[in-house]
Amino acid sequence: MKAFRNIIKPVKHPLIYRPNRNILSAPKQRLDLSETKVTTLPSGFRVASETIPLNTATVGVWIDAGSRYENEMNNGAAHFLEHMAFKGTNKRSQWSLELEVENMGAHLNAYTSREQTVYYAKCFSSDLEPAVEILSDILLHSVYGKKEIERERGVILREMEEVEQNLQEVVFDFLHMHAFRGTSLSRTILGSEENIKSLTRDDLVGYVQKYYKGPRMVLAGAGGVEHDELVKLADKYFGIVDRGENDVLSYEAGKFSETYNLIQNEEMDTVYGCLAVEGTSWTHEDNLPMQVLNTIIGQFDRSQAAGLLTPSRLAQRISHSAGIHSYLSFTTNYKDTGLAGVYFVTEPTGLQTICEAICNEWQTLCHSVTQAEVDRAKRGLFTNMLLMLDGSTPICEDIGRQLQCYGRRITVPELEDMINAITVDTIQSVCQKYFVNKPIACTVIGHTQNWPDLDKIKSMLTY
Image (cartoon, rainbow, N blue to C red; front, top):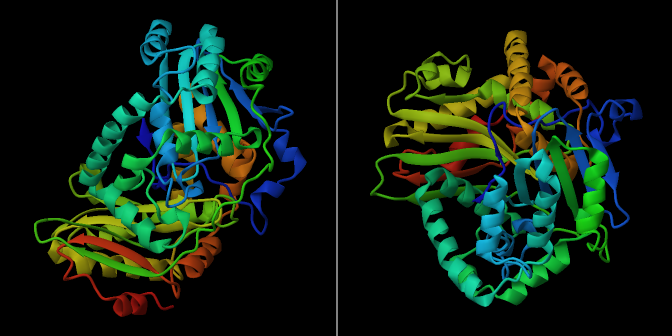
């Protein structure tokens, strides 16, 4: 079980683009090409599946409920619920649940992000019904016993300690905390230590009762799954899920704020940080061009042999600079906003160099990007999107995520056409729109003295 941060690295996740229009308004003939079948039950609960000739299947429930739907008092509830789902139901103890899953030869897991909570199982196709029944039992009939809650507090606190040792996680949590300050996106997925120690059973039950509603839930399946059978199982085991008072519950808008956050730590030999701007939402028309741009900027790791040979111009700019260990271009998407930038690891002496290199690269891409660079990035993006869909589990995850983010599954031919529609002019226009003359957000942890001041950085990003 893991609290994912939604960080989208170069050439990883399928995102979509249609010039000058919202992706949800794609023409009907496009949707007919979909290999994913979708059925909506009367409660608004959706069932989506893709049949693949395998003896195994992955089935899971994607819930539109994450940390951004929390407040200061219950922040951490979604993640706490993820832990409690495996601690016993009205009909199964924790021990009997674990034994049953093990005897099936299945794998049961879950994760939480800022916008979604996911529970899924990988099993033999012949065990599809038991897997769906178990998912419904842990989601709809968990006991949330007081003893188990007290025990799990310690587990989550230890998880928090582990996260605090992962400097990349720390950097991105601080980035969200300051770039989206005053909004729910600023809060961590795990919640504060105070909340972890104080959340009650009523808090957890209240969160489930408010957000685990039909229109917010998708039962996705891939592999040896027949759609009609999955629909029957959904009706049988999730039929008690109601629509709720409102089909869509509002969320606090994620307003981006300029931030300059330096965290001085004299004990650290290495500096970790990122420089970012506001990015796109999941459904914005610039989403996919940003992914191509993200791929062009790429990544670099001095410890990897291929790092010195990467075609990225930013990598070439800093590959001979002493002290710079690595960088990673990223985009992070949410319903209404996003982040785009570069995460880096360097010696203190390399701070000014990496900052200037990033700004210079963003500036250069506004007016100087070649057809060869764009074509290479488009090929790399599309190829890796397809390679990521290798097996029932990633396909199931793709189905669940896309239905929650876009309201539908994007077909491969449609995705290919969208990528092919991106031109050199598109990339330059998007870069001008997002990376220059805009508010910035930076977080740097370690010996920060060599990091340029805010006015200097903004002057380097004036177009």
